[in-house]
Length: 306
Image 1 (tube, rainbow, N blue to C red):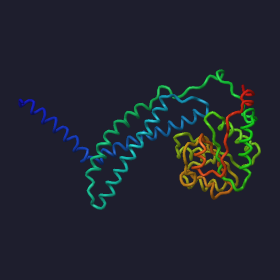
Image 2 (image 1 turned 135 degrees about the horizontal axis):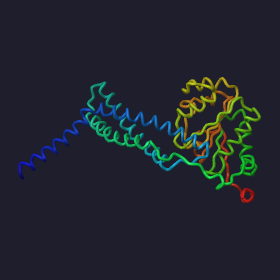
Image 3 (image 1 turned 180 degrees about the vertical axis):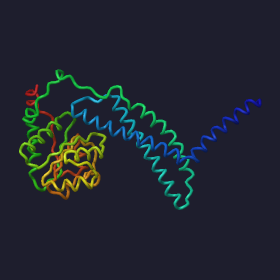
Image 4 (image 1 turned 90 degrees about the vertical axis):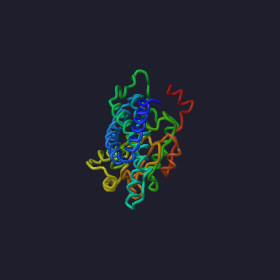
């Protein structure tokens, strides 16, 4: 083996060794750089999710590009949290002079790798197409009032109204397969409650599959006329409303309504919550006092709709 080849191998080996040593030595700096970029990514993600909810309310279809990007951010967030947990473990160990050599290396290496992915997602956040509207002529939907006149939907609505009138019920779950009309039913209940002034205030919030607690809080705060939207401030303000109905549409998993969001339905008897979900299990994990199914249309109702 010639001296030139030997020198090349030494240089390559030294370069690799130096790279891995940097993971260990500069782990803190690498983590801080990752966190800085990831915080920016999360801020853009929050804005994007807010735009998604607005688009959905306007009956727009979110582009596959946006949905895929949000999915990648969620996957990256899980990995970032793992890195952060290891970093926090190093900080805790070093308080007691406990060596954290392996964790230092892992944090430095993973922070370097995930920073590149974060930068890539930041670059991809400039979407070519965000959403598009459906051609109104392509779909012929019945009005809300026509829809709730159908047997199964009318029965579900009556069960919900009965539950709202029951002082022992504070959390109501509405469930049924996608497209069965849960949101339409919620809109009609909201309209009816506002029209009859059964509640002093009715607040409508879209949750979605990837819930943003801060956005849910802001949506509630906006209706209440609040600038700040912390869970304690929301709870305090909601307790001041004698009778308030909060309607949470499209819930996919358990939400800590009291501790995280600040909805005091358990201690404020004048506060009632209605949520919709595709699965009965979600109503169960949310510990709904009453769960109401919105069934598919009967054959007779289907022909009437047709």
